[in-house]
Image: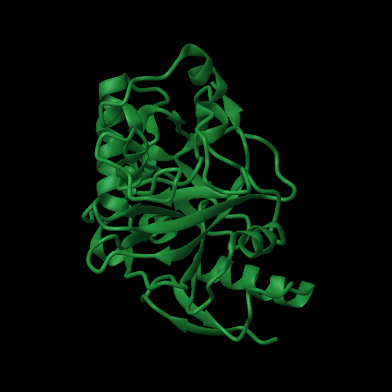
Length: 292
């Protein structure tokens, strides 16, 4: 197999072809995809519809899987696998969820710029999203390149962020949207995690600016000062020249690197069916993050 790559953006993101994702990948194919991910950070595979078994089997070839926030909330799932994460507006019976369904809070929170599970004491690597059904209008997804964002930082800002950490909190983004119905036990399941504001991607060796909506404070700063800095850095990282916007088609399969990108869903009519299914992999050999 030879992976065919067509760039989708001047800085990152590529459309990938030449591989059947339904079939088990050999070591050479996995190596090609991982090398492409180090270069592009995001790969789009068109016309690759996968069922639940196929999606989970594919993702497991790239590392152990993680169920994300469901480990704390204990939310029920309509899937056969705990590791398959529901990025849809559907109720457990498969119908479009009513507006008062608590699940829609998560749907709306996904419209904030974030890196999946940066709030966990786990080395998260790739996320993979399979499009089953999409609305006729809206519901795009955007990604930004945190490596390019770091490269474009003014020198004065670099001096401020170098050596500092940001605290990532699992429930911060939900609370911003007014969702505060979490028990002490749920909150304790995901204690805040400290991560450097400036990181180095292990594959590309490029520096990156690691921010996102899960950040709620910055080391060495008061809470208000830190949150203003986070807002400034997030505004910088998501400038249009750093962003790729994807319009979904059924059968699309997108892989992105959570260590070097942020992403957000875009608004759509919540009465229209949208069914996307995510798997998230961990690094095979990496140490956990520090816990505050």
